[in-house]
Length: 183
Image (tube, rainbow, N blue to C red; front, side):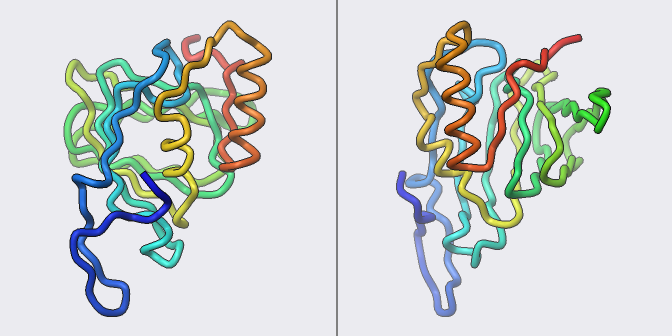
């Protein structure tokens, strides 16, 4: 996948229809609880910043049952999950590190502004299908393309630290693997 939103049809003034068959990524790589590249997820990128004057990134994402990444902070964009199927539980950390749990079900939206530490967990017994909106349009599709088949040993402290530093530098996405997913 390149850095341009694939289109099926283009119209004047930047209007277009997305091309899901050429905009789909299935995430692979190493699988462990808290993997940063969401292994097993299917992403369909309908709009990246290149097509929205950097206003919006819009994707359809299906997360597998049990999926949950490390806690992380987006430093460049706000993020919203609109739930179509399944259940997504989002845990947000406040300034004192206290956890706040937001359980979202089909037809509900969970929205989080940039610079808040959070993780999510598919807590339904079926995959969670969501629409994700990021504002402004962001570099995160490039991150997912770069880590699509990431093999990272979570026990290799130096490799995890290097990965986290590079991800923050390139994408403004700060992973916090030292924060336990469960308490």
